[in-house]
Image (cartoon, rainbow, N blue to C red; front, side, top):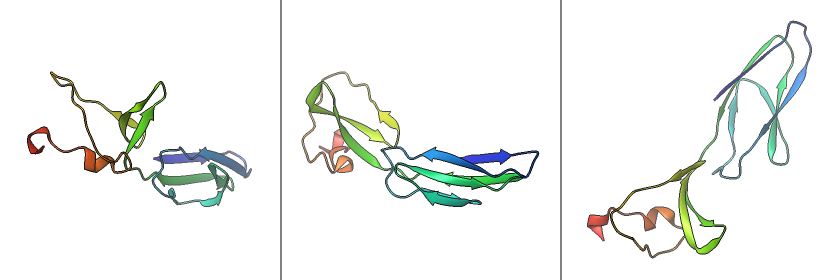
Length: 108
């Protein structure tokens, strides 16, 4: 994503960018000075025009459903993945290896 900050005056500004829980590693920030924080990054805007390009790495994961602890949902970054089937499907496997649990139905 691209973040642009501009000010008419040469007024410095700190922008706090929250780092989501689903990150699969450190955020890649280019084009501006960055200071890490606890659960966020501080982007430094010295004044004028500042353009920061931010990449947030993500991966496939299995997360438990809050009200059904034996059921999981598959998530790729912030996106919950869903599929429609004409019958109930039970998956077995290691929830810490989400990709290993998801194989095409005709390969089971």
